Amino acid sequence: MRELRIENPAGASVIAVGESIERLASYCGGTRSVVITDPQVRGALSLRFPSFPVIEIGLGEESKSLRTIEEVYEAFLALEIDRASVVIAVGGGVVCDVAGFAASTYLRGLRFGFVPTTLLAQVDASVGGKNGVNLRAYKNLVGTFAQPAFVLCDFDLLGTLPALELRNGVAEVVKTAAIGDQDLFSFLEENWEGVLCLEHGPVERIVYDSLKIKAGIVSRDEREAGERRKLNFGHTLGHAVEKVYHLRHGEAISIGMVAAARLSAARGLLPATEADRLEGLLGRLGLPVRIEMDSALINDALRKDKKRQDKEIHFVLLDGIGSAHVEPIGIGELEGVIDDLRQSR
Image 1 (cartoon, one colour):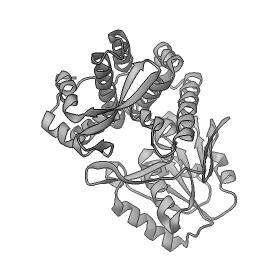
Image 2 (spheres, helix red, strand yellow; image 1 turned 135 degrees about the vertical axis):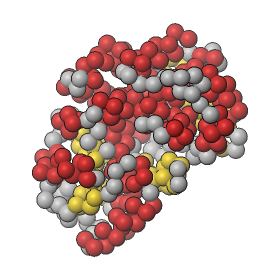
Image 3 (tube, helix red, strand yellow; image 1 turned 180 degrees about the vertical axis):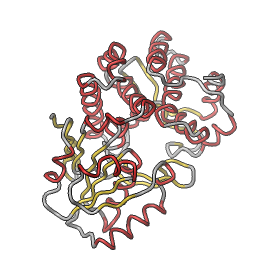
Image 4 (cartoon, one colour; image 1 turned 90 degrees about the vertical axis):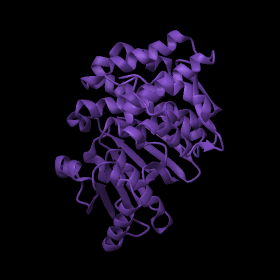
């Protein structure tokens, strides 16, 4: 087990990489605790939960809603949760988002921790302190910045993931490597088959390295005022595609990364061969790199992106594999990139 820490004004967030869910209770400090999970995870892992009360929420993005948050608050009331209590999310990104948002707003903030059960949640959703729910179809429009007290990344929990869900998480690893670590990117190019087969060595390497990069960025820029915006590489167009076409998050981000790399190349920032390299890796991982798009629907979704400011949006561009920067881009300029991707996957 290896440990990372994110330092912030409210205290430290401990990330235990390779820790077992069986040791969860030892991270809760002996206080009254409650687990938030979904029926799928509860059915598979309930025998490994500590003996805490369980609040169950629904499956999928539909559960990332203010209605779900209200139901969780009502359960907190019934359980007499107080400021000494600890809220624990055991599940994927949706469970972590809901639990983190509910805990960080109930009684003006409770201590909470995450046990992410998907690769996507281990490398992304559970780390960084962004907790949000959707408003209608628009992702994460309502949210907080609040760090979990602890995150336990148990690799054994990934063994039941379907192949599509595993690829969903690998897309975020590619993103992290593309913006911050060319060695990790090269490792993925050389070991992608081992990653998809969940070989322990490659999985430990990509999870730890991804978290180390993200923890460093978040420690320097907790509230996304500057450097942290780099973590949105591929997400501007990706979130729009995800909303309109209901793709998995990683699939949509894959398409968004290709678009961002192509725009970087068109602006003379990134060699075209490096954009090809990114697209090639995503393709080998079984992720989509093209989609037929309705530009009107995509542009409408872009205008509602929470990163938009007037007619511009903070957009992440690559300077090379492992290096990125953020600059404002006119939404109109993105239309040419969208047209380039309007062909079948």
